[in-house]
Amino acid sequence: MFTHDRMAGASRRRGDQRAGRVLTGDQCVPGWPRWLLIVAMVALSHAAQAHGIVGNRVFPGTLAFDDPAVMDELILPAVSSLKHPGEGVDVTDNRIGGSFTRLLTSTLAFGIESGWMHRNWGPSQRSGLDTTTLGLKGLLYKNELHEVMISAGLGWGIGSSGAQGVSANNPDTLQPGIFFGKGFGDLPESLSWLRPIAVTGAVTLEHPMVGSGTNFGIDPGTGQLGPMLSRAVDTLHWGFAVLSHRPLHAGQASQK
Image (tube, rainbow, N blue to C red):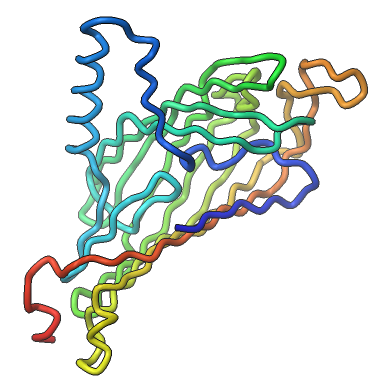
């Protein structure tokens, strides 16, 4: 799986918070609540795995980007850890987030996403809410025979909904995106060895509605952590994954 964020500026405010390795996070929960929390996390994660099915193909969701399906889903918790350049120094973000999506029609869904973030600046640490995002996502094209699914979304990052201490006190942003998946189960018999392969990916643009915001950062002159005026710039997020799995129904691919 490959992901990338490209910003139209010299500094980077934050990374894609959904990417990164999974943390257990159970060292802070003693005794029986720890086991109760673990059981609940496993049950919720299993019940709420995001995926899109088209024809004989499954397109699973990832921590880095959404799948092309439009459906009812609950993702809770989404745990990640990401080290990336911050305001003046590299920072590590440990995040626990969640999202909820509800179908409005069979091809249009409304969603909300937010989370709690702990930012490690090295000499100092801060915690607080991440930006809350509301969005709509619609299915544009679906072809069962050729295993193709394409959808588009438009998100609104609510300005000042996040904490200044974790650099989430951002201006309002518009986040248009395109999500796609293509399976190769429709290939001819001469290329049957490629039928288990599929690709899925997403491209989104994060466009701030104003030119600047105030967040915590390391002052390059004093080396001290404090509020800093930062320039808001366009950020392009993109990623794709190559998948391989057996058909949902044995023999279906050979019947096409």
